[in-house]
Amino acid sequence: MDTFVWRDDYSVGYTPIDEQHQELFKRINAFGNALWEGQGKELLAAHLRFLADYVVSHFQTEEGLMTTHKFPLYEVHKPVHDAFVQEVSSVLNRIADAGLDTATAILVFEKSCDWTRAHVRGMDQELGRFLGAQRNSTAA
Ligand SMILES: [Fe+2]
Image 1: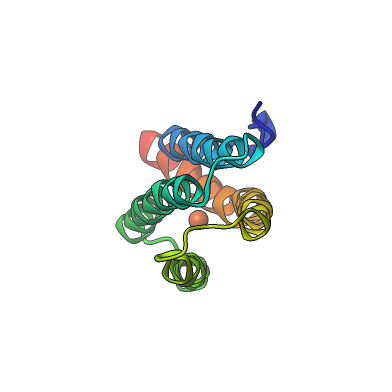
Image 2: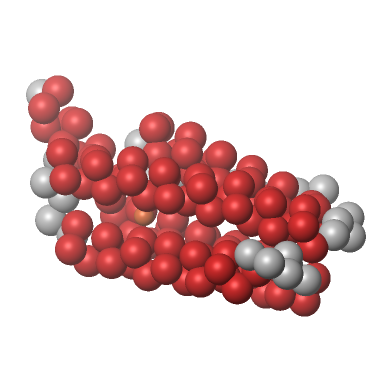
């Protein structure tokens, strides 16, 4: 059962980003479900890699939108992405040989949920408001 549930108030008001966030939630839940089902270290590591791949490509999408639309807070938002990617890749490096044990996987899962929830409802909604306002001003 999915434990990291998408809610309407996570919407940033910009459909392409919302769709990617929903995919992100899906992959976080797939990782969580593998964990709750008691899957082994190898499979947990594979789920985390699958999630991490999407995080990287999703951040690229957001950053592309920021530069295309000259988002004024790019210099603030981008380092936050970079720091998270850095953190995830250091976990992936640590588990490359041994796989992901349950205790670490629980911490990683909780951190992924907390970070995503806070980031989406903070910086990403700020970005969404900016993109929405730009769209409205060009449509007018
Ligand atoms: Fe973001």
